[in-house]
Image 1 (cartoon, helix red, strand yellow):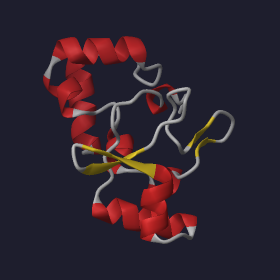
Image 2 (spheres, helix red, strand yellow):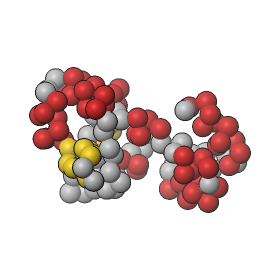
Image 3 (tube, rainbow, N blue to C red):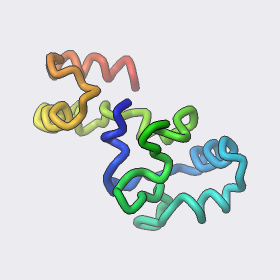
Image 4 (tube, rainbow, N blue to C red):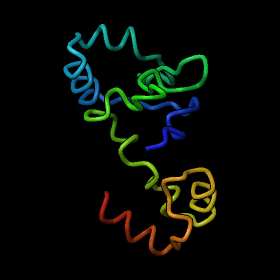
Length: 117
């Protein structure tokens, strides 16, 4: 919950169901959500980032402004398939993410991921 993963132009793709859920949560139309909060990348809608590189829905004090309805990819972090299937990727994620217990073994991380996904 530190917000470190909310920075960077990684391209948080939002699926149709997520667009519906988030726009309903915000009380705006689907079209307004897409035009105000998304940008197209590879012909797919992605959440915009601010000039500082943060997700458009990240607030330094309040953190994720859409937390109850955030995209699945955000909920899944740090249990991305690349981190779960490759120990080197997991080790890099562990160094970058304070949410990953530094004493956790790769094997334990993989076991935990099965409870999440």
